[in-house]
Length: 219
Image 1 (cartoon, rainbow, N blue to C red):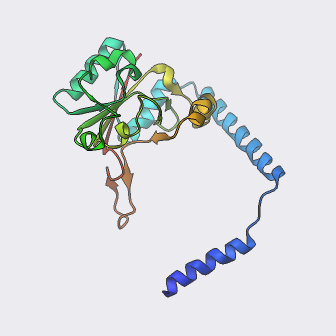
Image 2: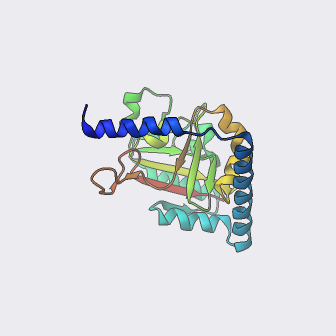
Image 3: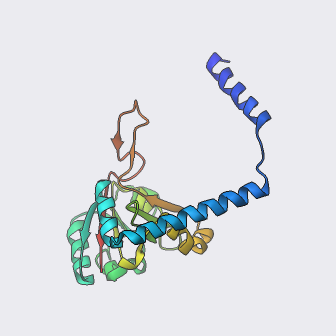
């Protein structure tokens, strides 16, 4: 066994011997504190007077997300049609896309298609289950017609977002969607294009997911 491996295992063994199981009261206190902090964050956000859509757009663009703000359902469909023109599209089921955007991607591969076929898609089109204004993140809960591969496998992810999907904070999302999350196999949070600096501390985009993310924000 190498010296480095022995040192690591020794540290783990010592940590296990000295580990402390938190008392119920500790867990309750932490939960109360987290809830209080979340509420304080939401109140501060509301007090700022910044519209949710404006904050979401600002934060998302700061992350490198391309955002188009459309004022009508027709404009949202036209924007999506322009973006995917001539591309191989992988999509959530048509009835899962807002603004009748399913009609725009009618010939797209569904998320239930064989994986080898999905791998050839140029772009994945989804809706979302939450758009977090404070971080510019998208939340996508997997389920029938909402395959997680659609947002993860193609090199480009396009999300069609409704104003009613906007939420101030991550805490608001968990509060409003906890039932759906409990039933789901997976919930994916998309905060800008996929990126990592694990490889020699050099930032690389598009390693673990799409290198490009676009949001079409409708009315």
